[in-house]
Length: 357
Image (cartoon, rainbow, N blue to C red; front, side):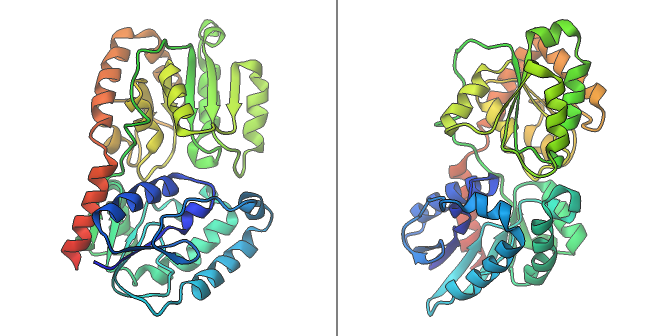
């Protein structure tokens, strides 16, 4: 199979889409010998290189970046080569190439909510997602939840949408016997959809003796609409620690292993990597009872309504004080996480491609 994969997302700071693209593309190239990657140019090598200064450029000139991105796709992706299948792992199949079929991954529909994206990204998706929707012959989605949304909102034939779960890297995210430390952990970008204000309100509701003993540790890069959030963080003084990022996945895994519990009050996820990563590292997890999270976490998490900070607070306190529940969720979480494998995910993609062709 002459396979083309758009890996240009690996040129920018890595997000969940980048993690997915890297892991699936790498394994697909091992399963399929005739694989070409597009990373601003056509190449047989999988290139992972964040362009210097790209993050700062995006922040300063986001609308200009939208225009340049469309021009780049139009100009750089023109090729005399033809392919059996063009796989677009990042929502919109914009490469101008000849292929017998196009299959696109749609990770979620959060872009429909204006308050959940920076303005330039909202406008980019509003203009381009519907425009290119008809170009795809089939779609990959990471959960039944996203499949239902795609079918309902855009009227896609259910037979054209295949659920293939993401994986996690079990060579990095695995449990150990390291001693737990007394802190509550959150991992995710600091943006409205992640619902950090409710988390702070929930933390403030914890009894004084609990807050004195357990700090709240937030790991995530500052994003849009976060100024009010930082005001709330400052009011809590040294009981809340914010880490902009960690140096590597290995460092992140160490945090998961040390954390007394992991809490994830997100309002919307198409899949949700952090809860699974925490589970894989032997950390008990409390998560929102919305979107894809119950589907992905199964019976291995304690659930709460993310819009009720009292429920979030009660869930955290329960995981701190109920040792039997903690041990039960740790055991279930490790088992649950093992069912999500990148090898299995990539193989399912490959089988779909072959089946489709």
